[in-house]
Length: 118
Image 1 (cartoon, rainbow, N blue to C red):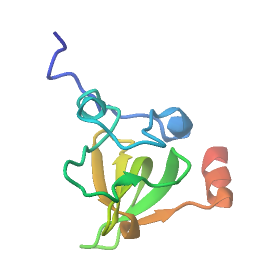
Image 2 (cartoon, rainbow, N blue to C red):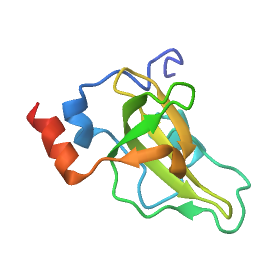
Image 3 (tube, rainbow, N blue to C red):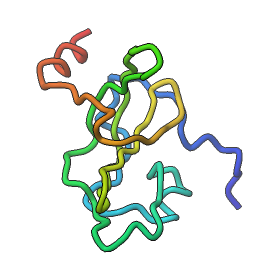
């Protein structure tokens, strides 16, 4: 039996962002979430629930509404419903989170190249 205390969302070096496992081209199952491949699993999301078409992984900034600070994260999951697009992400310091598409600012190719050079 797998150790339930095993950290499914460990910290990682941001320069290795392209190697982070993702859920792409399909909606996540309970097993995907349980095994640390997906951040969330939506149940009863309606007939329009599907994978959101986006190349993953993707670097983005998540803005903290309280103080407008920006946190660099790696998007690993994107699913759309009738009402919204939900994003699952990994934090380089460890852990994960989810939010709505409008909360993320995706990095441009130039910004990614600059980050990779440093």
